[in-house]
Length: 260
Image (cartoon, rainbow, N blue to C red; front, side, top):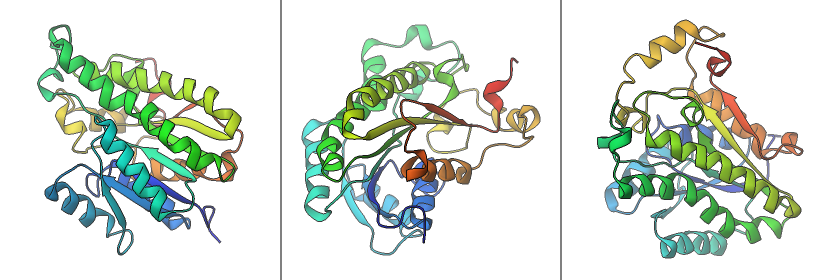
């Protein structure tokens, strides 16, 4: 029997089979969980996400969601509740920033709207989704919410810019949610994954050398793999992490421990 046998939840953010969200969903499924998915609106996005998650399971539950639109969020969670009798875990693996401003030397030039849009989609959406997940989780005794962060939230990564600020906001948001939702036995944590070549990371300027640098400098002498983060997500979704909340867990082969 898998660690997550009988557990059911929602993964938000699968773009393709290289994304962290895909690796998380795959690991959750391998350990016995039933996984539902959201995708960005539009037929093209539905096909892309569907094609990716069909590598995990046949006939996956899919629903469109625009994380920047409250009505769309309501529709997602209402549809999920209609088709599922429980919500044991929620995986928030989405972020957004206009790539024009994700270049070295462009942070101070970031316009107000681009700055606020990044915070909205990358961080506020965690609070918005958690609020909608609360009752669904609480009625079955609690659950686990997790979101994807990155070390650029606390140290400068040239070119990461407003995404670093947004991730810092995400981590702080998760701690406040952990406190507020804890009375319902809902745990909220973030996973700080190391650099992985994905659609999201490709938008950040100056990352060409990050992969090779990580392999050379990391204590484990390798770069992080999607499966590493997937295994950590299984731990957070399972009862093994029953006393863990409000934490940011690094899964980066140790890069965050280095001084230079």
